[in-house]
Amino acid sequence: MNYITKNLLYEKAFLIAPSGFINKNNLILAEKRLKVIKFQKIYYRKDILSHYLEYAGYYKRRAEEINEAYSSSADVIFAVIGGMGAIHTLPFLDYELINNSNKTLVGSSDVTILLNTIHQRTNARCIHGPNIGKNISLSKKSMISLINVLNKKSFIVNINEKDIFKFGNAEGIIVGGNLELLGRSLGTEFEINTDNKILFLEEYDMKSWRVFDILWQLKLAGKFDKVKGIILGYFTKCGNDISKYLIEFFKEFSYPLIINQPIGHSEPNLAIPVGEYCLINAQDKYWKIECKK
Image 1 (cartoon, rainbow, N blue to C red):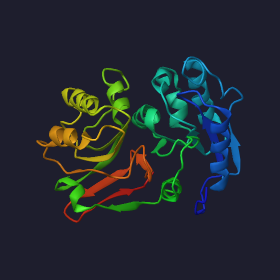
Image 2: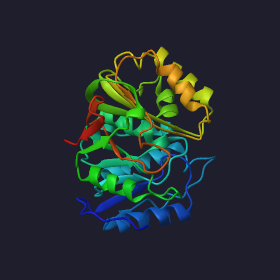
Image 3: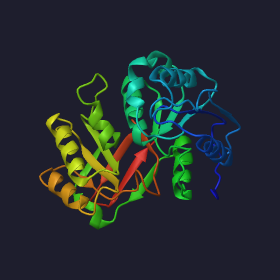
């Protein structure tokens, strides 16, 4: 873990397991990474290694853990891994507590549904970034991006012309994340709001036709009707023909759309602060995030 260490505004972290069950190695790795980027205090519940079916304990345990993290003295809450099951916790979260907490939640993949729900229901800061205990090699670029976004530093990403699918400019609040999790929110009180937003999407280990069908599900639910623009990240292990399916789905859309951006289940994975201002300038070949919260 040879990261370039930046000065971090925060010093206390709380680790949570809101989805799939974790093992001791995930926990050790998470602590090690946070110490490298200079977190001084790292907290977690004694029952974080709980195992119920495929989940990190019963749904009430996981919801209580999230609420406890938001009531703690920690500055930043990190999901150890993703997996499945975060949706179970949504009805049991204390959104008033979260709204008043002044804490930041970091995670991705299954944690997508927590990030967008908490953003929509509260003023708490949420960052689509690495699940800090996942047993993969995190690049310097990913970790530096996370540190910069935690420090509320705005950034610009240059676009290769071949990655511009639809030209134009767009601006708005950015929301999104894992495609499957956004699909799971449909028809619930936690359904994602994409109106007048920049929407970013990524996916992992899903057949290309399933990606296509979930995109159609979102379309039929009206989730593309009022978006300002779209940023497509990695569609990792989604089939060699995934580009054909994405092109087919988005070919008749008119708003700015860029593809192959470094977001999601590959490296580097740029940290995206859900709910912050995003600008897509396809003419000048860049997009940017302005951190204001």
